[in-house]
Length: 260
Image (cartoon, rainbow, N blue to C red; front, top):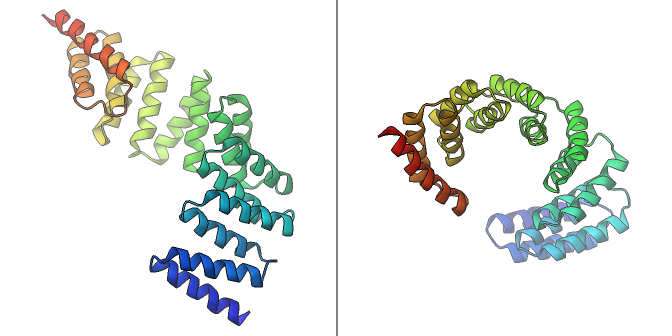
């Protein structure tokens, strides 16, 4: 045990110095000395992932799962690794294995909901989000994803309620304000949409907020302000779809003619 501790300290020191390959060798030696410790598989897999050797990391974790069946530590690390690799179905399968062992494992519930939502399985995803909320009802990331799930499935009243509680807890989070403003817009409460979106851009302007402000202002007939925010949108439409930007450029010409 003492020798293993010394080796772990050496591996950590090598890793901190940036000598990743040598650190990986030491972690491998530690694993060979003690293949019954889940942490030893995880440490080796983590540094393999750090070297972008993700397939090797998965093989290391599979070895661990074969040696220590039912290890939540190993299964959850496998699930995380698959997520980083973009292999969402594999990750979901691993998380489901974790949840069979521990149905209230928060990371497994949250990640399952997030993956299913990405896959378009919105209703199934919501079930996992709600189970996760029962475990950590104040988790900000979870609440934001739950609200977005509700909003994108037409449950706007429920989504707005979640966003309003988030706004109370995190009044300076521009993303929450932005999403709340958009939800109000889709719900038809345009004046609230405008107020909240203006608050969002006052904290941190984004093309998304500018665009949705333009739409809302146009809907209430405030063409002057709509032009103002559309110009701000076109001034830096980073990350926006090119077709959307071209459409906005044409819309600006139309709106400016209305002001003449």
